[in-house]
Length: 159
Image (cartoon, rainbow, N blue to C red; front, side):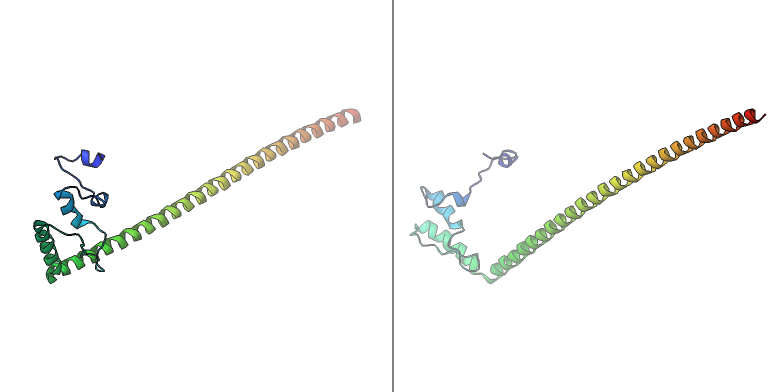
């Protein structure tokens, strides 16, 4: 059972030909064995089939072979192969672009964090400078007040 299969809107059978292995217990499994991917010829479309076949299966296999030998169908299969290869290349290209974009985004995030940290450091330094200036101003005012008091005391003493 598979979630995808369970969500189909109609009853169906999904057969994984690759899981049949060498077991050919009934006619259906023998028929499905025609579509196994092993023993394909170089072009990837024609299969070399070595088993002895019943006449009804030989007819099916002959029809499949004739379809594969038909130039128009072969050309269509070649076009399909080229199209699939193009799709794979596009998918790889998109995956690489996506990966590069994600990397760039991460780098931008790192730079933004660094900029925020620098801005926070600058704010902290500015605040410390303001605090120092305020402290110095207060100390200056206190010194001036003390100096004024001393001048007054000196004037009192002199008078």
